[in-house]
Image (cartoon, rainbow, N blue to C red):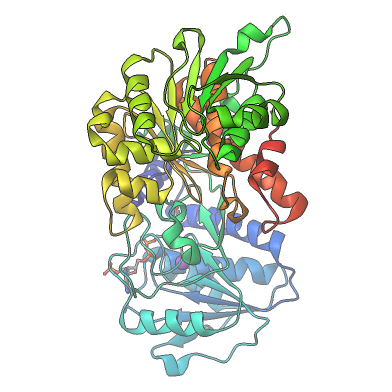
Length: 493
Ligand SMILES: NC(=O)C1=CN([C@@H]2O[C@H](COP(=O)(O)OP(=O)(O)OC[C@H]3O[C@@H](n4cnc5c(N)ncnc54)[C@H](OP(=O)(O)O)[C@@H]3O)[C@@H](O)[C@H]2O)[C@H](O)CC1
Ligand SMILES: [K+]
């Protein structure tokens, strides 16, 4: 699914109005109906609803939603935040339509705010994508008062006060909804963890914006939903044999960190690879053979960490990094790998830290190599950033400069491609923030590369399946009980 900027969404609006054609008032009605369908799926009409409206089109939606919910038997009270004299044309029209049945309360100052029962669901339609500056004055005061209430808050399109495509400053007043019902597209702001408390669980309501515009308009931002991920899966043909699915090599492990190698191996084997060889230090031989009997093992000369490479010519993909350590000889091994490999490559964990500490190695990265840093590893690679929008730009510039794929791990992992496009992941949960899940991801992506997936698709699909397995594991045992082995065990294709 594409993620558009506020300007592009406005353009999609205009295009739909002209080419469908449909009046902007009818489009607002359609959007409000879509919101109401989603709202009614979540809340029964025995709970009162308080709708706070601004005077732009977000407020216009709020008024239409008030009318539609009333028609469905909800007890609705409307509050109009008087931040400007005149409302937008569609706001005014919906005000006229509502006023015969309702007497909205006009809020000129916080004194005008009513007492609401805690059962009342608050619908936030004060400001939407038309936010042009941080909320201040009356709007800020109303936002802060609403946030102080214990009530459940549902935002229309986007939380009031939240910028869709750029970072807010610390302390900006922004509604903290438990849920956002957003129109047609996720907003970039929803995908960045810094905004988690300003989005809540978000849902997309399809409002039928014109498909031609959506198809023909370029954007660097995408959201990998189920449909997008499933399209990437290459079906296994009936007459396949193990040679069809490649031979992966994972270089991992050191004394005390063999678990990382074990987890990578398990995930690689559970992701469709034909054959897997693990290159590990001698101390890990029995550990690996017993924990993953399906894997073959090549043992390093060194007992405790990796110092050399096996013959690389037979492998169709290589993963390197989990549990590796950063010994001098290990650094030399990584340099030799970068100098000699002809196979698609994924680099993770300690191998990333080696790159950060030896930046001359970055110039040796083969094109389309996949790097999977968590935020700290990424910061060591590129330096710090003051917010997540800035960090995303750093990742895009890094991926573009070195022609690599960067999987910036976290909630909604961002897969950044060499052409600077970004694919945000839709799966995963907070239970996965635990040691070893990154090693599992390395194993999955190595397996996909070995099977001939392009690095771009291997990264996007691998990240998606990793999150999906984590979601299944969390469903079975709860987030707190989740460990990395569960993620590997819950992989299903
Ligand atoms: N395609 C769609 O997705 C559709 C979306 N719809 C809804 O429309 C809004 C966007 O409506 P818009 O009128 O452009 O903008 P807002 O309602 O968000 O607000 C505009 C008014 O608010 C003023 N404003 C802006 N920032 C502030 C602030 N910090 N404090 C106070 N007031 C502010 C702004 O004033 P300006 O001085 O900036 O002009 C306007 O008065 C979208 O979110 C959807 O909910 C359609 O209904 C259907 C199609
Ligand atoms: K809003």
